[in-house]
Every structure is written in structure tokens, then in C-alpha cells.
Length: 431
Image 1 (cartoon, rainbow, N blue to C red):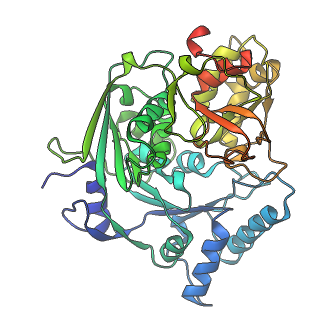
Image 2 (image 1 turned 60 degrees about the vertical axis):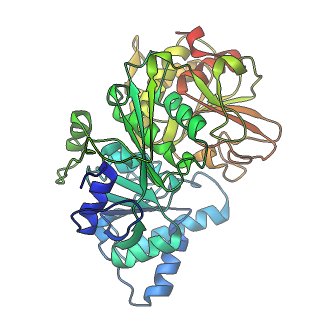
Image 3 (image 1 turned 180 degrees about the vertical axis):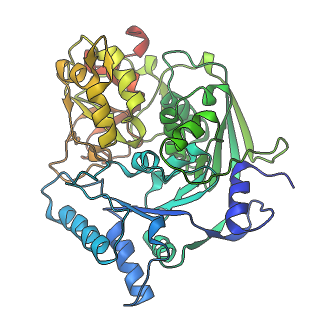
């Protein structure tokens, strides 16, 4: 029986020879990830349901990253981190990366990759909808609620329905002004925010496999914005090189069969694509940058698991280098490792961090920060009446702070170009 890559991975995890969409199966989970927003309620449910003698099914497979509401004086947010800290100490959880220590890593989805938890052919669940980011490594990864996570925490298993797959093939070499963010915004514009509901979004083609791991993670990261269960890209030599640098765990590479069945197949010629934005207030409210060019801005934001990776800053710095920003611009690296790379990666002998600071942008500590709104003292947070262009993944009302703000989603190239003019600007004007 022919299968897609997602079906093959789920088949392996369930111990079955084959699976097909619509079947319900028990999966054996390879990694469970949680953070400071969902970790405390997950722990509370686990303790309640498994009793006072509750045991973690496999501590080596549990990973905890405080990353959402951490650089804040908000007492409720601080209390959540305290709960994680106490839990990790009591149960001797080695894979706890505490804020305020050298072990702190930053945003969970990027830290999972950097710390070697993303392994081809494996199954990863996390208490965050953007857990689908890890699918860039040829693995199955998806988000779950706190109750499901508590069940995994106690048993290592979860009951899931096999999803149908949608396939998106990008043919050709990407022009210099097109990024993975433009590709995924095009997909969302085509299928809408519910067009991929409970499906696997599989990305393929020369345009995809010419991308760096950073950029591939942008594609799979936003699969959830189409309602999808997971996003996935088959592992190749680029994937293997990244993984082998970070872990010696065994892995298995799967590919979809040539005659695998898909719910629908989409095909794109990347040479014909334009820089895109998602207009307020939905990631599928697609338009070209040219059509909204000139829209006045109050703030620019380059960060998050979607747009705060090294490749995002390399792209932005090419445009910002030697110029000054016209509106407040925030640079929020997705991880502490990326923050360090900003210090050493250079253009014409000038570090990326210095390029941004010389331009008048503010470089902040690594965290989710304003991507999820956050407490009032969150760096980059949108206030009433603000119009923001951002490399983040969602622009629903209130997502970056005030419900009376408007957020445009775009590539780091587009956000960088816009930061220099104070209005939405096509990056081709600077490239």
C-alpha cells in the first residue's frame, strides 16, 4: 500500500505496517515539549489524574523551555516559571532550560532544533500550536492541549487520527526577493485558515529543497495557520548535516511514495511569485506588497520562531546596512544562540547586531516577546492604534497586544525595507 511521508512515520510510531487517513491509532511519542504558558496546567492535570505517586514515563523524552512570558515583572507570569522550576527540581528533569541561567535557550521551537531534539522519522508533541515547526526535519510534530500532554507525560502514548495530506510543490529557483515567508503566505491565501483543517501539509519541489533549514522551518511553522495538524518536508543532505552536528541519535528518513494519495495537490512556479503580506486581521488575508505599498506604519518587528532566525537577520541586514530606521524597529532573536550569532556574523566587517543598532533598531533578549502580546511591559508590544509590520505568524486582533492595533505579516526583507521608509515598502526597491 502506498503512503505519504506523514503516514509512514505514523505507521512506524504505531507499530503497524500501514495506516491510512481516517484511522485511529496509538502513537508512541519520542519527545514531549512544554513551556511556561502550558507547562503548569499540564503538570497539574498529570498530578491530579495519575495521583500522588505519578511518574514521568521517560524523563529523557520530556523537554521544558520557559520562553513566552519571561522578561516581565508580571507576577502571574513569574509564578508560572517558578512552577516549572519546582517541578524540574522535584522530578529531576534534566531537559529543563531555565531562564536566568546559562542553560536558557529562547523560543522552544528553535531550541528544539538547536539542541538536537528534532530527528527525522520521529514523533514530537508539544503544548504549543507551532510545534509543527519541527516537521522541517522530516518528522511528525504537532501541538496538543494540556490534557493530552498530561496523558503523554504519564504514558508516553497518545490516540490520534491519521490525517489526509495536501501537497505543495514549488518549482524553480527562488528569486532573491522571495523568502519562505512569501511562499507560506501564498499557500494560506490559497487554502485559507481552515483549508488544511486536520491535514498534513507536505512541502516539496526544487524551491523548497534549495532553502536552508531556517527557511524550511518557516514553511512548516505556519502550517497551523491553515488549520493543519502538521507541516512536513522530507529530510535530505541539508537536514542530515544539521542533525548530525547536534546529536548522535539514530534516525530514519522517509519519503512519500510516487503514487501516494493526496487530498489535493498545489503547484507553483516560484519565478512568478511576488513579495506578499497578510493584511489585518488574518494570516490568509493575502495581498502583494506592491498593492499595499505606502501604508503608514508605527512599528516594525523582526523576531519569533517564524522570523527571528539567523537567516532572517542576514536577509534584513542586507537592506538595513548603512541606513537609518524611520519608525521604532525591534530585533528579537528567537534563541540565545542566534543572539550570539548576531555578534559574530558580519557584512563588510560589521556585525549584524551592530548593523541593526547603528540603524537605530532595538535588539532585545531572546524570547517569544510581542508575538503573543504578553504583559504590558513586553518589548515591542502593540498599543492602541498602532500599525505594525512583523515577521511573526499571526495577526488576529490583539495577537501582538492591543485589539485596537493592526498587524501586517511579511518577510524579513519586506519588514526591513519598510523600517527604512516608515511605510510598507517592496524589498525590490532596496535589492
